[in-house]
Image 1 (cartoon, rainbow, N blue to C red):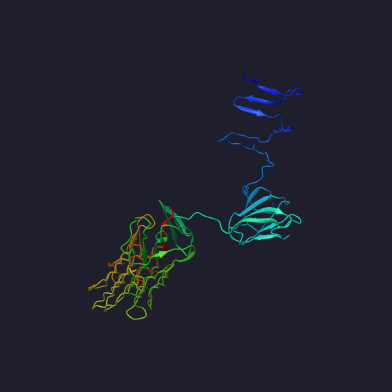
Image 2: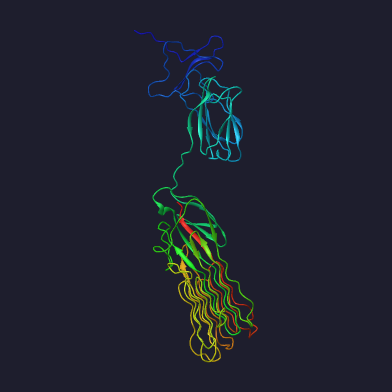
Length: 491
């Protein structure tokens, strides 16, 4: 029969400290930090097949050698430091350049470092050898100056010193699935981001989708120019034309409601790349002085732009039969003015785009009695109204043309309405033309003054007539400023 020794603990005689202790499922060998354990034999096996041998936290090992790897320190370095053999570091030089000092060289020592923020190209990391140690046979500093670079150095001997055994000149990054951009007023609607510019700015694309084809980088947009002001004259001024309206719904920007002027298909598509895109938002045409003699034609609106898309400013409303006070062309044309004759309104969609960015202003409807019937300014969808016929004592003003409605901002909004024309000031019962939907201004009449186009709609301003009542003595309505909206899928 085999002999057995059965005990719970084995203790030292001198101080009764444990040499072997069994507590529950754990067996502890050793009697304290100052007492080494020596296991002698031609072969020593620790652990069992399929088991794990763990090094206690804070403990170190010697004699096992290294496998060419390091323990990476996950707190990045931001200033000069001294490396420790067996460790890898993430060096963040985004704030400034600094040094990594190597430890004293000993055979098998190993150190790694990687570019944390991909800024080694602008702020270098300098590797400094210890004393007379060498880096690649030279007792000189090594400078890492490549974006995304990482190196692993192993100390071999006094001849070569530290030798680089692994060098990567770029970091591997995940390919983005969607556009990442900034600029303007940013809002979201589900998985879609919307950038709204009500004044000049920059749309900055920081990253674009790297997979699934170019349609992921195709953006929706709305570009509306500034509307024009109405005309001012002693009898009746025409309405200002709306700013040009251009819209495009990209395939992956969601199924929101678009206007009839949506340019997909057939319009101008914009596929963005990682760069900055300047945005111009056109101002509305300023109103002229109060009407008098001479009369004052409306001022045109200014263009709005995004990349290759430009919308033209609205055409000024007419103030006289004769050039240069006739209606102007533009995104939408200004209304015409005429006494004892007809004069055309300004031509819309000038310069021409596809789909058309606007319509014509309403022509003047003069009559044999020499009364002026001014036309309304053109809107994005509908032309300005013309008032025809004989109105003894003076006629009403033509209505502004209606604008276009889109839900690119996640709710329906109308833009680019034409300005209404003023009534003939000699007939107190006549009314000024109505504003076109989409921010157009109301035309003036003997009891009220004209109104301006609404800001950031591109609406045309209302026309004005001569002062004949204390309720209406001001200038014509100014044009409304434009707007640029960009939309895309961001998640």
